[in-house]
Every structure is written in C-alpha cells, then in structure tokens.
Image (cartoon, rainbow, N blue to C red):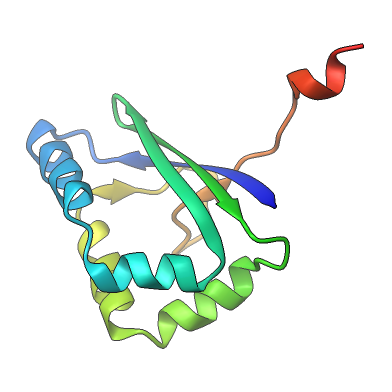
Length: 114
C-alpha cells in the first residue's frame, strides 16, 4: 500500500468554503466509484483556514497518470472537477492547470524509533 499526502488552497471566502464542505458531505456516487476504481483504498481531506490537506492510501500499482487519463474520459469526474475549481485555488508553486500538489514525506516516527 502507498500513502500520498497532497495539499491545495481554497478561495478565501467563507461562503465558498461552506459550499465546498457541503459538496464533500454529499460526494456524487460516480466520483466515489472513480476513486475506488483507481485503486484508492482510503482518502481523507482536512482543512485549516483555506489550506486543504489530503491523505490518500492506494494500491501498490496506483498511478496518478493512469487516474488522470481515466478521469479525463469520465464526464462526471470532469463535471465534478470543473465545479470544484469554483472553490479551489492552486498553490503558487503549481503549474498551469495543476490542483492538488503531492507533498514530500520528511519524517516517519516508525522509521526513526530504535
């Protein structure tokens, strides 16, 4: 199993943030299916202010490239992602069109305990 941590910002608007959270309390079934079909076993999103943090556990053969290709071919995923852009704001380090940015792990308690 692979674990990925990703980050993204929301637009600094309390009403938009509230709407974004409401969408995530009722994620469309097609979106949940596409996540599971990609080999993602678990996903959680946390928010602090406008900063989002996602923890994603996926199968060992999970690929972001493959998921992106499948997402582009799925009209519901495309519709969901377009909707989410109303609320999301890319990090300044993101390239044009990039959203969630994969974070580098810099510490692991299990790996440091002797």
